[in-house]
Length: 584
Image 1 (cartoon, rainbow, N blue to C red):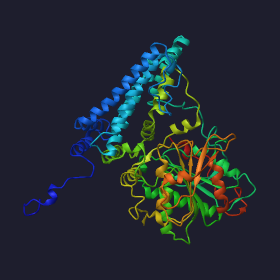
Image 2 (spheres, one colour):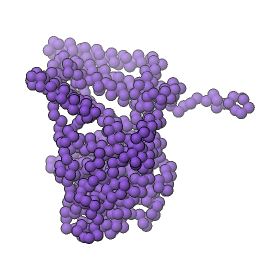
Image 3 (cartoon, rainbow, N blue to C red):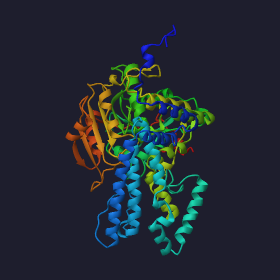
Image 4 (cartoon, rainbow, N blue to C red):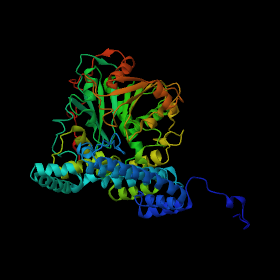
């Protein structure tokens, strides 16, 4: 209404932003009572279906056809006739892998009835009329979590494998399962690995090296050279600070840093401090200035070189991309301290961040900010629980079944041990990261962010880039990781790799014979669509580590004598893996 009291044309305009009036009302309710949309998203979907009866009738008709097919299948099985499964588990669903779920008709029907209902219900939620795409995904996500929890495999009397093990062990499996339950109640977590399964510095993170730099943010580890000469340009790896650094130095056979050192490279890696309440005000700017910038300067000084190869992993890669844009403006082209750079499973465009998107909106972030304000950080267990929830079948209910219903001991798996070794996130930094990266997606917008006094524009980056993504990555979807090609300067040469496996094992991907994995690789053009790139990328059996070395070698300079680790002026702040890695 105008200032003269008359109605204006725009007062009658329709809001076509994609959010209905009811959805907006529920969003406000959600921010107060249900910040993560556990119930309000499902209520939104229910109301939307009630308001579209024709679509609802068609959905019910499709579900009834599944019921009829299952009944026909049941009758054939009852008469001893061969009958293929009507509804099969998804390829990544291992809950019904035991032959009993297929061979015994009664268990087969329970399995297929459950799968038929869950698949149809999830499809309905993804197709809910009248809701925004995000609200559909959120409703489907939370219903899927409930359906996963209600799976017949999670209950003793509907799990034939659990009952068989109980009979075979004369009840010992249930007795041990109860002990495992008490163990996890005490730990306040469904454990995936025993707390004492490994010892950092003894079983894990054993590659020899020294801490050569330390400040309030991090320790910098230099791994002891194993060759007479090394490439002149050192490799500096910026690790994510949501977990400990040693994922790239698990065991000798899996260690990327040992592999690089044995190939004649000077390798440095960051081990971030586990933040305490006193670090609540540590910002993303601090991670860039006191983290990456000081580390790069220290390595250049130690190795007496003007430039390094800078590598970043996950959120460490996002920081590296930000630093590259920052340094391009701050230092200028002539004084740029990075010769080339590498990204491991990194997001720079957060428009479609995968399943984690269900946790990202104004209400959810406000809730997290209020929680962090009380203690000064986001607890590592909260972060770990969120990521486990994204893959609840394999990371929650699998261990529920194995530990409690089967009474089995936990496997001694080094990757799971590292995954449980969580760290905290400073309140100021994490709030900034969630808002500016995930919620507002400002990193890919030119000069939308100002970090450490410099406007950030990825288009200023001209240094060669090697980017690695993973096919089954649910934290950094590879199609989003691929979009880095679009935002950095067209002059920057880019080699993009898509590895098989996921966020961790796609990177921790040692060279073995016969090969366990494969990868696709090609140089994408500036605006080339990922489907076109994938169509022409060559697939190679084996590890991308060898391809990375082939890319690095001509760019890392001649072979020279390594830094003299025995010299009097060589920094020695203690042996690897340092001290920060042990902070709980």
